Amino acid sequence: MIVGSRRSEGRAGADSLNLRPIEAVDHDLDGRTTGVETLLGDPKSAILKLSAPMIVSMLLFSLYNVVDAFWVAGLGSDALAAIGFVFPFYFVVLGIANGLGVGGGSAISRRIGAQDKTGAEIVAQHTMVIMAAVAVVFTIALYISSDRLFVLLGAGSAAPLAAEYSRVIFSGTIFILFANVAYAILRGEGDAKRAMYAMGVASLLNIVLDPIFIYSFDWGIGGAAWATVLSIAVSSAVMLRWMVVKKDTYVSLNLRGFSRNGGVALEILQVGVPASFEFVSIALMGIVINFIIVAVSSTDGVAVCSVGMRVVNIGMTPLIAMSTAVISVSGAAFGAKAFQKIEVAHLYSVKAGLVVALILSGATYLFAPQIAAVFSYSEASADLAPDIVTFLHVMAFFYPAIPLGIFAAAVFQGVVRGKSALSISVLRTVVLNILLVSLFAVGLGWGLPGVWWGMVSGNLLGDAVGYIWVRSYVGNLVRGAVY
Image 1 (tube, one colour):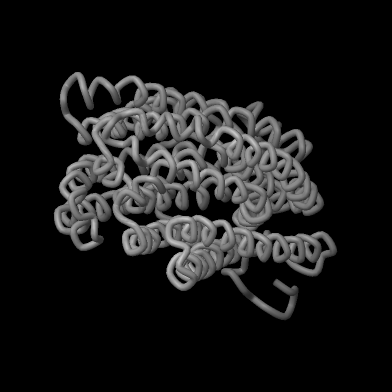
Image 2 (cartoon, one colour; image 1 turned 90 degrees about the vertical axis):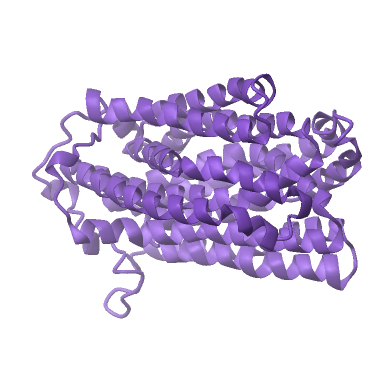
């Protein structure tokens, strides 16, 4: 935003958010935690310290997704396909939760940068109230529509299983939303270790319950869904105790004294809504791509994509963890008007991310046959192995582009430019991915491999645009040309 000339993205500058300079704040950081000290220190060190616990917790979270698919694979390809059809809608719920968490967490980080603890707690209160309202709406809508939804989406013989799985998952929407918002609040105050513990509890419990519910209790695919919901509910209870009962986190929750503040809600939504729509756009891409896969192959292709993307998501874990740290560090620096720290954080994260991405690419390509064998161990799913190997070989080229886009979006979210982050995501997923998948798979007749190459190409081009965009913005921010 050029000073004195344009007013965009909801007056996104530090002044427009009423974040007072540190020397003007009359409220000190009483109760200041180690996490807060980290957040306000050297940006490189902060990214490393905040990323490490998140990498552990997100690896556990991704691992449970893979374990989930492993146990469900024993039920056959229709069961795997069912999860693939449900996943985009589950991802919408996760996206809304993460969007609200990003909106609230980045606002909390900016309050911490401006040394305003009371303001940070007000932000947390408003984030939770918004989350509760969203949970009611989505639980009812998704649960009621589950019977017919997957028939309309072409799930075929997998439709009844998809409906069974989705009804259980959607009944736990409140826990999914609360847990992800609470994770983000903890990260926003620099307390990544607690977020790690809470996510670890959910992931490990899910891993233990999956085989018990699916096979020992003979609940089938519904057992996998119940394991997920119960695990997240337990994690939610742990965080609720920290924030509401013990109040030993930096930001505590006390809704008794809640007083609605439209400005705070708007600030959360300025980042939260675009961030949610980023996930919605990815879910939309998933739905459309499932249609294309069924058109050029069969529901077995959806099963391959469902399994393969769970593996890719594990690979992306270190990069996603770093991006959450970049949001918090950028937000705190923006609140303190220490704009040089934003540039340092961005460049450092991109360089480190590229190293990680190249390692992931090599490992995915080399070990593709072994990974495929894990998900094709049963007679019912053995025929999926060659296609899973092909998927992983192509997706090995997916990783190097990720740092260019994911850290661009993280910086924009930290500095209240949620629409810019959303634009990068929509360009990459809705526009380029769908366009190139259609071109390669249908137009050029490449079939399933064309779907995978279209996804890789779309992400590469979209992420490159995101990198150029954020470098221009941060450069102008440091020079004082924008706020």
